[in-house]
Length: 192
Image 1 (cartoon, rainbow, N blue to C red):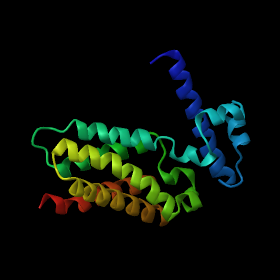
Image 2: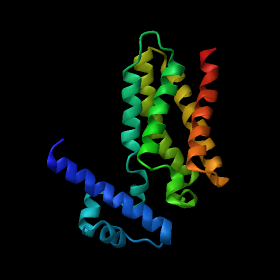
Image 3: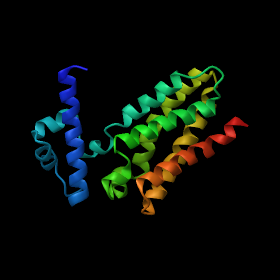
Image 4: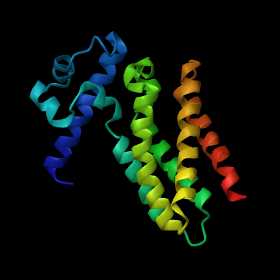
């Protein structure tokens, strides 16, 4: 990676870190883009080079996580069953979320904001669903309806389990464990 790319990643991460701290300290609604930029040591204009809105900071790496899942699906082992492959892809995406510190619980009460509304969640899920299902159908040579059903079941199970777990005030580590279990439970029927 070039020096320029490393600097860009450092700036992006500084903005994410600053936003997370400010959201936790003073709340999402009360935090301004100007405050985030200042806390990261950059201009407001630089903030908008990386993010369109302050809410985008919360989803910064969602595309990269889906990319990681698609890569796992593309690396299918010979004879690997579609459900096992998809579970492995979700393991990678969840591990990526955990390593990057971007699970919802790490931004305090942010999961109660309108950007986490059922419709916003559905819109993001549909984008993930499309990319993962197309990759799964291609890698496993299964019909699109089955691939979409499998990915939809996994996304729904993981999203629902994490939301309930965090809503109960449990830790991110507990939410991660529940997510892994929920994914496998949702996909178990597809191996029958």
